[in-house]
Image (cartoon, rainbow, N blue to C red; front, side):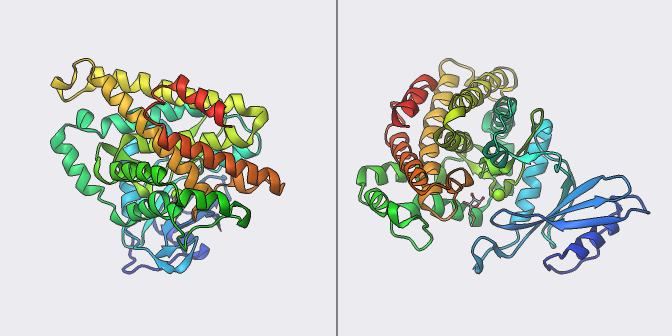
Length: 394
Ligand code: SR1
Ligand code: MG
């Protein structure tokens, strides 16, 4: 692969993305490339390039110097592309089946060139279209166990973990999460977005001091407990899926934080479907159960066989860790449910419900479940209690 000659940042056009791909010699010499910008996320440009000769493709992702979801009035440095590229490489080594291959990265241009996953669909879209993705939860359980164990003090050793913590210092993207998940939904922030008909429900959140106390405890955990390298934004829009494959993308929010955060985001984003997809409710409950059961089994295996801290292998220290992850995950799941209803960034599972009354009812249920999970996370100490509680609220 040849070297990139670019000496300054500029957003790519579709033609520039083709020139970049040709200059990198990723395709053979006689390739005829077509390119489409397909990014529908909140932050970045995403180009899909295809060689018309053989149909083979690549993805070029480029960070923009602002949050696309809001516009240029919300500047962001493009340094996050480097964090994302490093996280893809790290997670790709630890869980290669579940992470796209990276072909090329450039920090200056803020681009990552990676495997084309266009034969897969974003899991959130697939679920909304009625897909079941029977292996998704097993795959995510394995992905979580491997990435969270091998980046912890126990999988890496404390000295190497400290080196990795420096590499993945990500203050700017963490601040987005701190604000959008833990702060803004709990007061009358400009970033919040919700239907006028939900105002009474939302104002009740703002007045709920018990809830705000618990959210602050969870925010403190997010801020201070550098347990593992997190993906940091592991919702179903960050997962490509088919009936046989699962790939986790977009780790630009990666940083060292509490393991329960990634697990909780997976729980919450499956809970959206539990709430809205009544005919398939059982399937999504099973997905949640499988994520946790597979995670627990694989994490336990790695803990017992790959642990770099021999002194940690005493009972009940593993159980203590798993219980803490579970409790944190329940609380973080509650925060995700609330912010996706009240905050800046919503989810299509809820927002695409066409019937207004049905949509409002689903959002009220989401808020109620969020509150219960946050406040009662200590009593929700295992999967059975969790599922019983979900069934009680929905
Ligand atoms: C300004 S970014 C809004 C949201 O999009 C990302 O995917 C994260 O979930 C973030 O909170
Ligand atoms: Mg993303």
